[in-house]
Amino acid sequence: MSNLYGGQDLSGLGKGDKTYPPFAIADESKLREYIELSNQVPILVVFGSGQDAAQIQQKLKVFIEEAAGRLLGLEIDIQSQPQLAQAFGVGQTPTVMALLGGQPAPLFQGDQPEQQISGVINQLLQAAVQNGISGSVNLGEEQKPDLAGLIANLISQGQIELAEQELDKALKQEPNDEQLISMKRQIELMKRMGDVDLNEALQIESDDPDQLRKKSDALLVHGDAQKALDNLLDKFMLATDEDKDKLRAHLLELFELIGNSDPFVLKARARLASMLF
Image 1 (tube, helix red, strand yellow):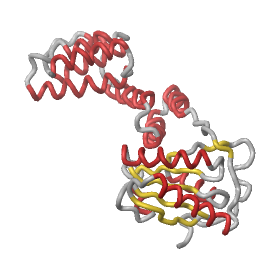
Image 2 (cartoon, one colour):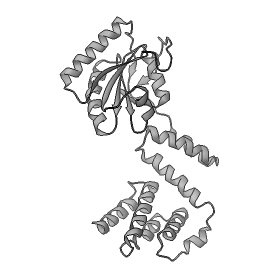
Image 3 (tube, helix red, strand yellow):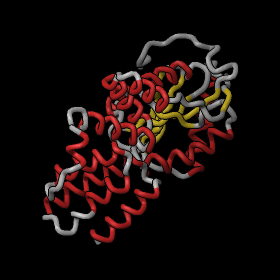
Image 4 (spheres, helix red, strand yellow):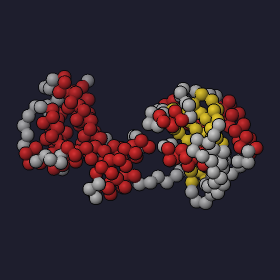
């Protein structure tokens, strides 16, 4: 099978001070890097999503750490990167493949006993040596770029569209990063409030959920997170079922914007839960 991205000899790759985590999260750029890196060390590639991938990764991580730099792992989330799974012809998950000398090779599907995984990895390492792939890399935690700092800088420069593009790419890599999610909500708030008169919005008196949202947005911009949340919660119990759904959705967005660990959010979340259950 041909190299998916074209082969080249990068025998010096991975030497020096650069470190690699036991498992990296793949996008197209990272996959290219690791296909090239497989000219030096074998790569274990896990295709999956959520818990099914996490369980097999935990087992493989032990073997990767024992290999002390002679083996690396790569995670491909089939939900956020379906095109990569399609490129490898992966349908069932979790699936584990290897990259060796730029070439993909299937290893096994589904969770497997550790003894069986050990045998497969030993065979992979032997095959690597037989093919002249016997290098090593520094194993550790790869330093992550300051994505949040980059995006915040773009926002401060008024480059909102570019900030959104970078934010969407960052969230594909780190979909559960609270800081990135908060920044996404902040940009959405800025766009909603772009043409809104702040003083008029602060004076809104209405039971309409969209008007309530506008007032909560204004309160948040004004610097009063507590009142922004209470403005929605105070109307929740007497709202219709349809309006409750809207108010709840607005609240969840504000929770993410303010920060799920913020004391105001923790208090508001508990109050919302008491009204839901």
